[in-house]
Image (tube, rainbow, N blue to C red):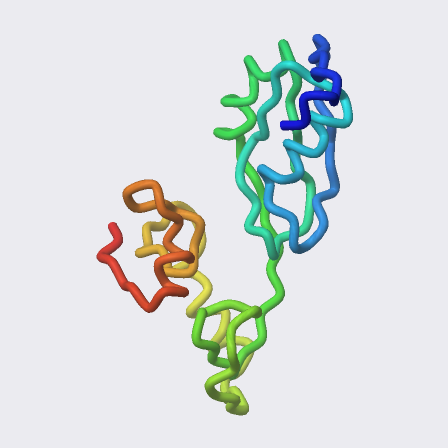
Length: 151
């Protein structure tokens, strides 16, 4: 730290900022940037959006952080764009394309499969995810070629 630079003064800021998070920015990076811009003493976000995801990310400051847990547990809706017939090494749009095929199914076939993904579901998270194992995000382990068992 530069000894000549003045020490930052943190302010009491209370409220919620509804941020339209752009692609490529982590939720925490967005939060820390906003926190510094407002010089807010206390801040938190209401759920992690994948860096590839765009959309509404409520950022809470000061007293508003007390109800951020309620926002975390609130019902949410997600929209996704799916490219059928494309397989990547990471299972997402940022991975190296391994295979391209022309999908052969009808809208009725698709609807029959989608029924299984509605409502409460459980799944094994992919290695390329932000979930952590021993403090290390799984995607970092995956980039090192390490695969660990996931619940």
